[in-house]
Amino acid sequence: MEKHTLDFWYEFASTYSYLAAERIEPLARKKGVTVNWRPFLLGPIFHAQGWNSSPFKIYKVKGDYMWRDMERLAERYGLPFRIPVANELPQHSVLAARVALCLPDDGPRADFSRRVYRAEWTADKCISDPEVITAILEEMGLEAPALLDRATTPDIKQALKDNMDEAIAKGVFGAPSFTTPDGELFWGDDRLEQALEWVANH
Amino acid sequence: MEKHTLDFWYEFASTYSYLAAERIEPLARKKGVTVNWRPFLLGPIFHAQGWNSSPFKIYKVKGDYMWRDMERLAERYGLPFRIPVANELPQHSVLAARVALCLPDDGPRADFSRRVYRAEWTADKCISDPEVITAILEEMGLEAPALLDRATTPDIKQALKDNMDEAIAKGVFGAPSFTTPDGELFWGDDRLEQALEWVANH
Image 1 (cartoon, helix red, strand yellow):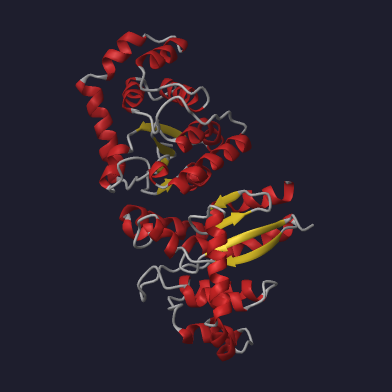
Image 2 (spheres, rainbow over the protein chains, first blue to last red):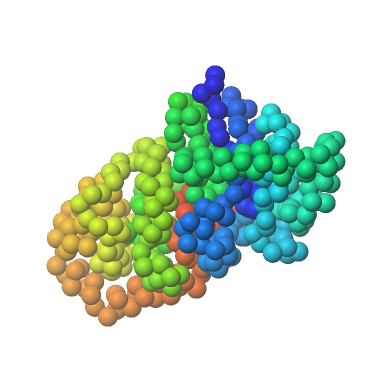
């Protein structure tokens, strides 16, 4: 059974990662696939490609398209979505990624991740604000101060760096991405079903 | 009925446009949608974004991914596909685009376009070679010399420029793209079904 796992690489600043985070667990259950939630940061990967921001900001026509595409897809999937106006985009996602890595990957990490995405893409919240993260952790009944302290320890910082090194080694260049035990990479929320089928059938 | 039309914007040098060109007509028929085949060139659009080639060449990890994604999608759709090695990529597509515009958009243009894509993506042919285009036109029972002459007349050159101006005005920035009578833009072969549904339901 161990081979029926899919690594889900997500970036908290990413729009399309929100769609995948909401959709992946029910779809994976139907296919008998276990999901590993792997937060990472796209910033360093984009920098290595010569971009100083998200390509959606650098290429305006592509950015305009992305917002409309997101609106249509969210409606299609029955998910709430609101284009944020209160915070500069893309948001700083390192705090959310580190806190996610403090939580066990058997439910709490996925739950926390979805709540962060909802704060960002449906409630116009600033996800780099420790108070926003604290509120999410408290809603979950978790010890927010202890987790925020742990999020900046060397162990957790290293865990995020390790995730990034592994993502890059696997060829990940955007988010969301999905990697399989037999070495396949799928990029984009629109490849989620295909990635799950691959894992279930190989 | 006129509103049930979809403009299909395709670039002969584009891999994913090949998939859409093969898939679009049967899917459109099922939805009662008429397809307008609109060849255009991505080169000038990419240049305006500061790229001197295809992003798949400039960003190597993205290019590597694209080839694997194409292989998997072609297999999924039951379409032949062979990564070309004989010609530098992206190929020059202006000749094929101009010849396509010489052909009426009620069958022959679609037929020609699919044959060009098959030459390029399944048989490793050079689509800027007039002999390759001649062979395709002759297979179709058409007058190749007359069409090749017509392809470089001011009328046809202007028709291609007009297509490009219209594509840019509609926000097109990649290929394939699909635009609807009510102003929606969908980008990518993976949005084909969604674009057809939109036209059928609006």
